[in-house]
Image (cartoon, rainbow, N blue to C red; front, side):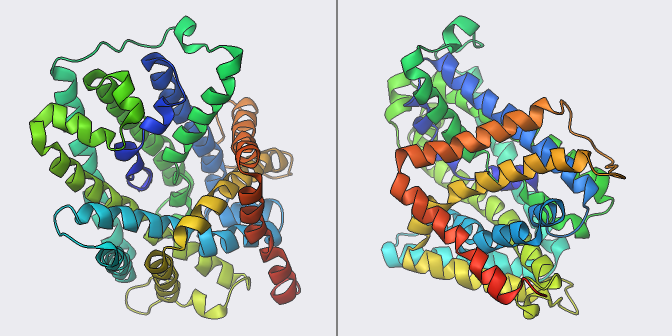
Length: 418
């Protein structure tokens, strides 16, 4: 679930975004590896939280029990209205656009395909967590296998030499530090979704050990896939082509398999998008269910299907809102304005580790390696993403933050005294 949720379409489409900010292939490889290490740090923080609070809801539960119900409510509020449903709509649109490679469709047809895949995968998860997780496993296994095949072929055929980063070639002039940070921010977004497995803790056997192991192993698998794929891109394509390409994986596939590379890429992106969607659709309703149990969301969201044993009402309402965002195209504005606020919550979650370590009786089965340096580094990077967003687009960032903050008066109006 961890690997399948993280590996979406971005690694096949937009590594050029990182290359545009950097000067050498070694710097590019260093950034991808560094982003994997930083994500692993966040995963280890999340793993300790999961072992301390093995309950359905994940980050919502961590924020609720570490700080206050308001902190947890704002996370769930932002998830439903923008962060989580926006991701579902965006990935469904990517799936639909690449499906149009095989099934010609105009803009309306693409949106209908996006809604269809949201509904289909929501129905799959409605029918049971076992079925949804099995499909997730199959799709993840298939796309990781496809990546291994592409990487193997790409490393065997002649290409450019890309050696391991030397410190002298990774370091950058002072004027380029901002570009280096922008590249790392872009890379970290490609690693997004690593925390979502914690939402299913309540349905996981031995969650205090399984969830931490899944987080660490899953992020390690993704890091290996991302570094290897970018090594192949840089071996097969000139650096200028890597910087300017809008379909870098297709260009690399063309170099590997000839002119049929576009079809190979389209199939791979569809496979990868479907795998990511399955995990994201599965996890989100568990948060809304947990909020409803706490009296912080409408009570009908806590309904469990008597046969399938899934939070069926929460699955349906998530599918409806994500489909609405995809149909209207509103996900673009909502998602791009609000997604950065996720990192504010991540910084808060990591800060919570320092609070918990001081609580009497706190004794999780898993403890973050490298404490306190690892969580501190993760907090700094998370805040840097937020600051970068405000520095680049202050009005857009303020509007996105406002959409999250508006949840506070709703909380005090409806739920604070329950």
